[in-house]
Image 1 (cartoon, rainbow, N blue to C red):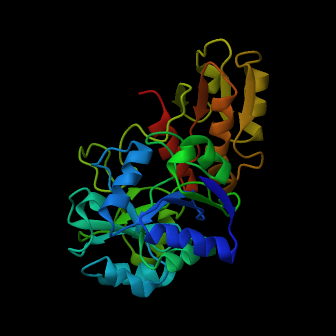
Image 2 (image 1 turned 45 degrees about the horizontal axis):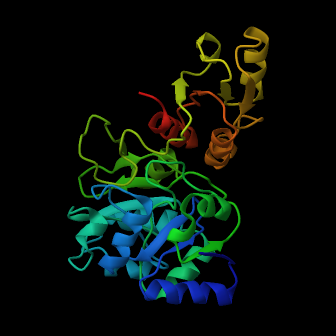
Image 3 (image 1 turned 60 degrees about the vertical axis):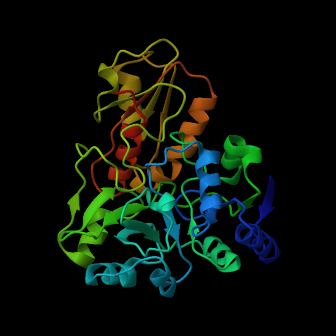
Length: 328
């Protein structure tokens, strides 16, 4: 494994490795992805092997330009075309009927495929250099924290990859929003980097996935996912002061106001108080989430106690990741 600066020459080198069946970690605007040729079943199998990922969790296929969608999907409904035109490239994944050529290993045997056109120029350049759409889940061991820097990938996957393209920290920091367009009403299967309000402004009515559904139809729907090794407990906003943490626990507050209220109202309850965003910015909280959890996990706290963010915009995505990472 080599970490490569995302220069034109190194992107071309990584693209040749992908075309030959290799694995490359690539930066996107959301998180780093573990990329393989989407039409090479052996390469895709290496992705599952590297991540130790259950075969029933589908992968997202990434394309470099709109015209490549027809290589992957069998039919693009009007709502999908509207979303593609308005919100691509960006942190939005669309579930659409797949072409027969897409391996079932990519879609976990489902008749639909998850498709995304990333905003990252490095990611799109790599797809073009590989000459093929890329299947790319997050570049982390299955169920663990998603990586937002090349160093996160190197620490977690190490020698399982051919190359890691270093494009710097991911500016959004949580995975893409996934919208199922195979039914009559667009259904958000996974909240993420694209707010539901933004999607609704394009297509009108949008509904949110019901967690009681047992069989996942897209990435990120499993109930336990994105988890640190340190036990994480999730409470409602303002509830950290009523918790009963073990000695040596750390509190993850939303903002400086929440941290100050906790310090004044429950002094000494936690060994340390940290916050996702000093200024209560949902965008900053989303961008910092995984990196901060990586740091807390590495620091050896007995537990992590986190409070929910406002259930709006990117706050939904952060709450979704915290819920999946938490003890049930």
